[in-house]
Structure formats: structure tokens, C-alpha cells
Image 1 (cartoon, rainbow over the protein chains, first blue to last red):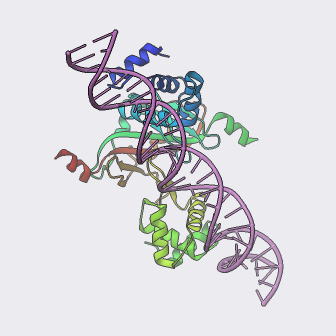
Image 2 (image 1 turned 120 degrees about the vertical axis):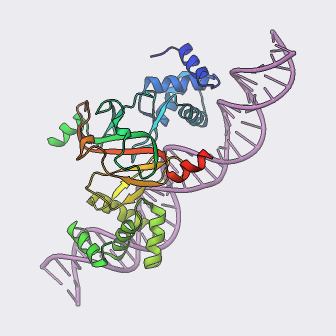
Amino acid sequence: MPTTSEFERILRGAALRVTRPRVAVLSAVHAYPHADTESIIGVVRADLGEVSHQAVYDVLRALTTAGLVRRIQPSDSVARYEARVGDNHHHVVCRSCGLIADVDCAVGETPCLTASDDSGFSIDEAEVIYWGLCSGCSTASNS
Amino acid sequence: MPTTSEFERILRGAALRVTRPRVAVLSAVHAYPHADTESIIGVVRADLGEVSHQAVYDVLRALTTAGLVRRIQPSDSVARYEARVGDNHHHVVCRSCGLIADVDCAVGETPCLTASDDSGFSIDEAEVIYWGLCSGCSTASNS
DNA sequence: GCAGTATTCTTGAATGATTCCAGAAACCAG
DNA sequence: CTGGTTTCTGGAATCATTCAAGAATACTGC
């Protein structure tokens, strides 16, 4: 977990202004991977006191645009954010409880990037979501 | 494109009641792949006259649950539906205009179903979304 | 260190897809 | 044909997210 000054450096490196809300949001995303926006707001407020949700939405968008965080949004879920970027990993989502876990790319480097027929698209990213049941829900449903 | 009576058979086969709205919605999803809910409502109304959006939402949920249609929901997009089910194909989405196209599974049968480390999840489906630019938007952005 | 300027944060309201609710209508079994 | 259940209608509610305008704050050059 990077320190505050490291977060500042990360922000500057992305040509983003360093503000308290931004450092707090970036820190929260690092601390709580796959957290939804409301959770992040809660963490940031616990850290800084009152912060408008608008600011958090704004910061999350700025960080996402800058590529410092990744936004993931499985069907039937609100937007979630994570700080692991640039390593082409994917996610498993539990159909029952919504738990999300990271999964490294299955077949090596970035194989998923190659579609069999790209229909004329120039593809730059492949996003994979595995659906299933987490160990807890799986056990519960077998009983 | 199946006929109305075929749609009826499909519905009965899934243990669903046959109603005019259901046939119309199923038909619309077959006719307009990747259409969003509002478009489907429009098509259904052109066919049957006034139909409540509630009915369409309801039918789409019933069909999705029954496995007759698939719901896809790329980030920053409303829910969309398609009738191709059970053949493990994926999608390319244009970042610029939102166009969606089908892509057959890249590496053969259902390889994506195997995650390198499933974190204890029992996985039953892999959903792949390729992000990029469609040929039209790609050309436009190069100029 | 300090003013100027552009970006960012606050407050509060609006948007829009989706869902909830209660009653009317339609479908299927016997 | 009738009963009973499921589905459809109409309208209102929910909730994540966004828009807008003014106040505050951070970076740039002096």
C-alpha cells in the first residue's frame, strides 16, 4: 500500500492536480479493491470529514480517464473501481452474493486480445468476466 | 427469422405462457440484435399498438431467466438483449459510437471458461467484451 | 512568497433506466 | 365455460449518476 506522498507522486505523474479528495479517493481505491462508489465515499469521509459525493464521482472519473484506476461494472451491479491497472487481469463474479475476485489472464500474455473475426474493429482491450458461485455461496446452495 | 408460430412453440417449450406481448418482444429481439429496451418497446408498439414499458421489462426478464434471450450490458450502456444464446459467442463494442458486433469465441470451443486460478469459485460462464473502435469511427478519428 | 488563472469542490436539483405496487385483463387446466 | 393463476396496465417511486453555478483551491510565472 503506497504512502500519501507516493499517491501525490502518482497524481502528478498523470498530470493531475493534487488535492485532498483526490489523494483520499486514490488511497481508498487501493485499500478496498472492487469497492462501489458509495463505499468509497464512506471511506473518504471517514478520512477527511464531509466530502460531496459529486467530488468523489468527479475524482473517480478523472482517475479513470487518466488510467490510474479501472472502472468495472458487471451487469446488475453499480460501478466499482480498482487500482490494479495495466496487467490485463480479469474478474470472477459470484452470481449469488456479488463478490468479485481477481483472476490472472488464463492463457498467458494478452491472448484474449485476438478475436477470431474482428468485424473491422480495431480492438485495444479484452475484458473478461467469469460468472459463477463463490466458495461460500456454492457450499450454501448444496445443502 | 422464425415465424410467429415458431416463437409460440419456443415460448411453450420454455414453460412460458403465450401472450401477444411476449411473442412481439421475442420477435423484436430476434429482428434487432443488441437493441436496448427502449428500441424494443418501440418495435413492439409498432407491432401491437400501445404496450406498457412495464410489460416489456417484465417479458425481457422472463425470457432472460428462461434462457431464451441474453442480456448484455457493457459499461456506460443501458441493457441490451440478443437472441443468440448457447453458442458461447462474445462481443466487440465500439468505444466511440457504442456499436456492438458479434464475435465467435477466439480459441475454439469454450476455452475462456478456464481461469488460471478460480479463487474457489465454481465458474459456469465466461463473458468476453472486446473494446475498440469500429471501422467507421476508426476512419473518422484518423482524419 | 504572492497574485492571477484555470481547475476543482460544494450544494442542490435533475435525469433516466429500472423497479414496485395494486388492480384489470388474459391465458390455461379441468 | 369457469376458476385460479399469471401477466399486463398505469402511475408513482427509487437510486446511481450527472448537470449547473458559484465558492474554494492548487499550480504558474514573477
